[in-house]
Image (cartoon, rainbow, N blue to C red; front, side, top):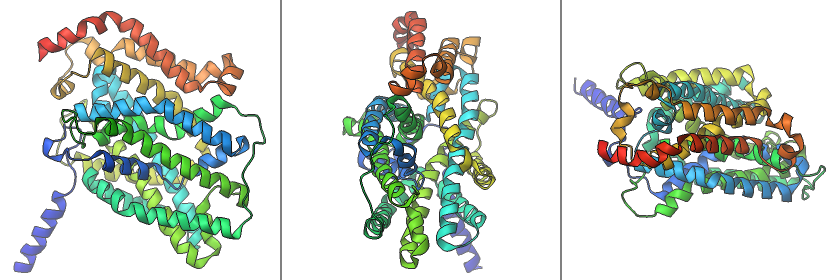
Length: 456
């Protein structure tokens, strides 16, 4: 009897660690993440086994121009990522709940459904890379590794941001050591030379690839993490919190992009971890590094995907305690199925779709949060049931988004040389959509602060 009670007590304690906050405001006692811890979260989330692929995608432009493209992408994404970081600290909600005021409740619902599938795609893409790499290293069946990696990631995400941050922090050194050893293996056993350009640099195309592969694909998820950070009312390290996401994300892209480019030049394959397939001892380090890299990144794909799905469900029903863990398990299963079905074969088209949709969405939402809402909308207001058509559909932002989307998709047909050689097309689409939104909402921008103050 005593053993049974002890077992029940332990199980109760374990279940108590499962995160069930869902889409509700994060309690103040859980908002303790420092800027340094947030930087590590994004550094590790971005350090995927897939990230070296950027070195292959830009290989024909050469090393110097790839580095410059990554630095320019960092500057482009710095402000959006920083503002989303501050958004989560100011109102401890996920970005797609805040989008209810930007796009209307039904508009936010549609984006929540869409981004749930986008994150499932990222999860499947990374799981596919991990499965194929681990299968080559261990000479075991690839689909088995898909399920093993998928299951580990689901279990980790069930315990939420608190334990994800612990996991990132305490495994970061192991990941760095594993990849450092793989770099040593590359330089010691292969003829490595600096990759030079074989084609004229296309800045628009290169920056589009980088931002959609990294910082602007992550940006709308930033507040999903920063809602657990020290509140913005605490002035401590405000600049550090602003910079943390972009520095973490792009530092990983730069380092692993270099790895991928040098690996592509020396071995003909961007996937550095495959070096371990022909070296048993090195293979252990490669397998551990790949597993950690994929788990780090996919946890930050599955976690926001779960929250996005909950935003969609909450549009029509009240949240319940166990919605979050159930959604995590369901999405993790179907995302793993995507990996098995071969999403890796469609990576470039997938990246194009991401940029076309996410960047205009993100830019317009930032404009609304900063200049229309003036960062003053209370958390409770995002859960009020709409009473007017405008609250269901916010047409200025939706129409502006469509304008940005049209430019992102077809702008290259209108001005092919401009958007290939000079300007990143999705970024231009996002900026134009934002300008349309500002012009449309200018009267409201001038009057809304007084309205919000009266409501408070």
